[in-house]
Length: 334
Ligand code: KDG
Image (tube, rainbow, N blue to C red; front, side, top):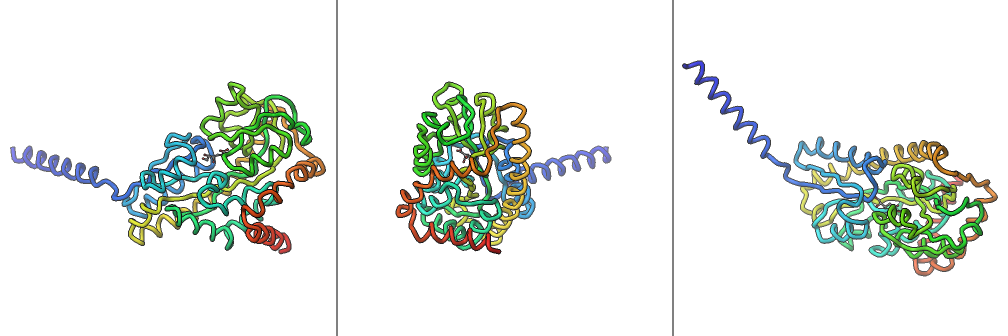
């Protein structure tokens, strides 16, 4: 009888303890949404970020991840961050331009000759100053992650010269410079949110699009696109960003946990993304007609889109464009 009582009491205590622990929900929740799917390097790095934040905050912050535009497209998610109804997202720089004009500079075609030159500029004063400017629109820019060099795909013909692009209906990100670059090559560009892209290609609303190899493979674009070319016309950075309303509410030690995790996850992201883009180019060779341009052929694309610099220099800010170009040169001279 006594033994039973002790067992029952212990069980009751265990139940109370389990209940207390399970209802001791984290004090803060970060809902993070992206457009790419859960196989992407971007999602893998968010998983890495989540693990770090939850561990280093001793469970005070929980991170929920959403992929494949489940929470909306890049623009909608940035607006949700501004309103404080979503905490985190990670868009390409192209759709950030309507929020902070200076971000346009990074979508100039053929701006960054190598990944390392991009890292140098993005992690240097120009990149960090632009991240800071996001605060004026209610967003905290934590770090530049990487989308990567964008490559053309289409369902009509192999593309070896800018002339081959003529007349193709190409989906672009919602950014005037991407539109202008494809117009210079005689294409028929249409801006569209990423979440609508696959069915637009499937239904023939557009003939082609441009994205890094990892995206082309992992989003199954090869199922609806036969041809791809290593145009590498733009290096597309990602920006990991958090709602300022949310960040300001965090005690400073937890702000540090989030900031530090974002930096560590940045390194994880660049490493993973570069390895994946190289690996998926090889896999694409089995399922698509892949054109690898010679340096001379690539130079023809660079020349064709050069007018975009003159067209947008004043709009972006001539000083900013020149500063970025000077830093690229500075890096190359090292
Ligand atoms: O998760 C990021 C995507 O939403 C988007 O930025 C991907 O490069 C992209 C595109 O083409 O829209």
